[in-house]
Image 1 (spheres, rainbow, N blue to C red):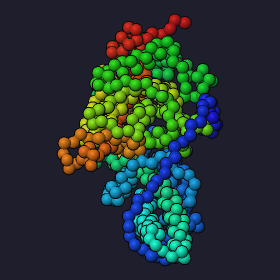
Image 2: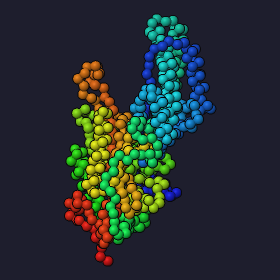
Image 3: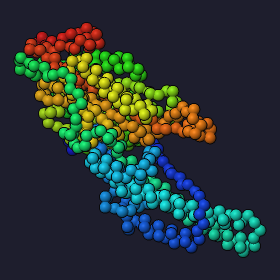
Image 4: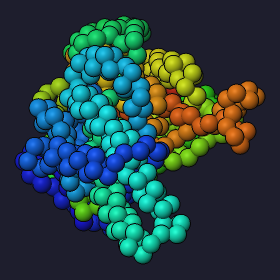
Length: 534
């Protein structure tokens, strides 16, 4: 069992780990009574099998997701878009099932279709609706009728009947039972097909999100101005070499390109950034965490990321159902998986430190050199679980925390309201922060903050039970029915890109780099990084 990822056409393998069995989900069907004749039932069974024969349909592949940092367009189609029907005899069930609101999909078909178009998503809405309607019809018109017929036969058996008639009823009961078992198997397969397709549909977008590609994103705030230099500026790669802070060459020999060693003050700068960020965010009421850095594939998928497929950003561990995390959002999102939270416990606010791993498939060029785009890095992530009506307010709180942190470090940056084409599948709305990097001569993304509403919680099974004094909203047991929480995430500090900003913006003419005042106490009092004596 090895860690495997395609890199430059070469398969890299390492990290021996044990295999963990995956979770298998099943479905059940409902029942009610509606009288139909056995002959009519047989005709409908024949028609159903004809409609769903392997000669007239396409087979569904595995539920595959494309990329960790994917946009909504990354939801790959699970079936040929020209297919009108789906085979009930494919062999692999989904590993998990989301609590998808199919009623809302049917009632808001036009809005859903527009949302998919705005996000450039390949999700097949028409197929989802077709499968759902077929499932409802099959449950109502077939399974329930067969069950009703079987119950009639069973009731007749309870009375006094002649031996010959009893034998006829026994044979009829056996026949109905066999038909019911076959039909219920078809229902399970149809349910699995529906789940696979529906889980590709991205979240709805906030009505104020700008429509279009990344270029359509709107600047909502600009902080500071670019520093004016009176001397030729250097980028962070040159500064790091002259100040003996990085070693990319040795790391490339040991691990491959886009890895690095931090040295000397750079190590202290990383630790200082992490500890300062944690202390600042904890003042806002966030609970600190360190997280596992390996997660099961199903948890990665439930959070809306894509551990398998072409151009994936996720390192998957071969022979297991595990992946290296690309963000602490994944293990933090999994803490309360399959649970009902107390209303009084909300909001839950976490600030998590972890290492992150990303394949950065397809990333190359001068714009991504040095520390800007790497395979492994340290990051501090904020994560909130809250009541649905509060998520918009907490989204604003998260971006305000990010802006406050970057302002205290003296960075020039802009905050963007990202357009629909740049939203990840879970995001209802996303704000990005781009800071000026003078050595690179451009703005670079250093943070983002996303409101995912109930997209992740429906997949992770995270609900809460509202406290209610209104008897009309209570269940038979006197409690309010549970509802799905909303989840939000935001990057407080992605260390490598913060280093790029600090080194390039605080460089001096003599080749030294000044440490921003807030970080001094977290770096043992170091105020300036100076060139080393040869």
